[in-house]
Image (cartoon, rainbow, N blue to C red; front, top):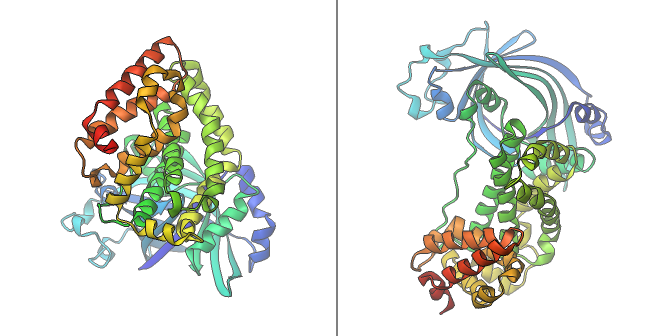
Length: 454
């Protein structure tokens, strides 16, 4: 068994050709690009029990070699993934179920009849790979770069494979992100944590692609730094999966959810006070602000305008043809992996980062509530939009961590603040003015709101 650590980056054919000639890859390559034709058959049961157990089983032909591989789903976010992988070299192109023993086979599949495994889909592609070597902080880094071009085929459906994979062979995972960032500065690269196996299952059954990632569940004693990192990784990973699925399907709701993850991530970054000095996150906050500023108007227009919804896929394709989405995703991953928000903070910031989440969050929400004069917005609802960033900071924590609070009816507080935030974000008209005033009154009368103000 080996652990596979890699970054997968979706690219266009034009970008794939440019990567082949990229000076950074050429300078670090030991022997240039080597071409391989890879033919892969994936197996599962008719009920797709392997997919539910988060493993993928394939039989690959690479030239004259036949390789049976079992991979676990592992952890993956923003294209950076870690998986366990088992390989067996076979004499014949026939699946050997006997190799799937207790050393690798998931315990939940112990009762599965391995003779029921059958072909499900294929992924056939040409891979050009190069071994890259360089020094990072005095240590050797070795990475296999692979340019893959081909197709995933499931029955009558197929999808193009066009991607760059960077697999770590020696060194720290941060080196992969740094290399990807350097390439993404020149070329549009879309970090993607969907494997070729997941693509095949998605083609076989479009409903099988799981958008929802398991949300972290910090408790009241979790240090703020730990909770923040877990929640930020979650939001970043969710935004990536939503971007990939919207690119694939064009379903409007996915685009709305994608923007919501970015708004939540921006609000999370803006909520930490001294625990994350502004200088440590200024680049990320600026990149998120630019993306949100560009995408909020078309999303608002699409709430009432079908033409705006129909135009959105082309706008999103144009976004992916630029470098900024890839750069943002990769830089956020690098920043979180390095825990850059903890650098150069004051002793007060260190204490805040180590504070128990329940205590810190109660104080944050109380401070934010005191700066949100609802009585004013009952009288002047047209001014409520100025409080949207504050509402978003409160909402992201209430959405993801309200279970740590010792207060009455936190779920109701969250639900009513969601309504207030939605009204604050919409363009104002006479009807909306009345609804804003009424919702401000509703929130002001809530028991949990009054508890925050005590």
